[in-house]
Amino acid sequence: MERSYGVVWKEGSRGPVPGKLELLPRILRLEGLDSIREVPYEAVAAIRVGRSASDRINGGGPSVVVERNLGDPITIATVAQPSVVGEIAERLAALRLGAQTSRRVVVIVPLKPDAHASVSRLLKQGPPFDPAAIEALDRHDVFLTSDEAVFVFEAHLGSDALGPLLSDPKLWEAVSAWGEYVAGPPRIAEEAFSWGRSEPADEVSFLPTPGPGDSDGGDIY
Image: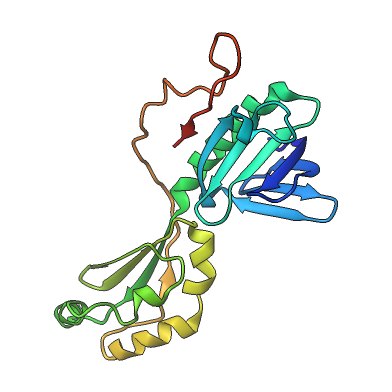
């Protein structure tokens, strides 16, 4: 369910911007009068409720602090509805958790019959391109079957950051070095199922700590 909130937000040490927050299926969108920020959930490193003075905007109530993998944190305070700060944080945490399953791109390269041993020897020298030259790439693995080479790319920015690049034919021109072993064009595999064991979150709460005054919020991982 999509919903928009009236908010005031700021990016790092920049000035506050009044506008609205939308929690869309793949991104959080902040829209002000003259500026728009869109942050993919894969690019969110942590979410916390900020209750300290440094986390408040213009001395107001608690805020939602969105820490990013790249870039300054974004602090979000609600307008006239301070009680929904916890709701926003919980929805963001759930959307971020769901997005974490899409950090991989898998590319299949079909091999000619009896090419396995030769390709295995080539791979001992590395893949037919430089992984370090692929911006945003965090990890790269190659697996071999009897008739396929399976290239796995992982990025903390998510598959959307890698997909357009890895589907670019220019990148795969490097595979021409394997020309005598490749049986056809590479193709990107579709992720049909993913499962991961989550850490228990029983002690995680976005609600204020009971007692007088406010308390600091905690990171949500």
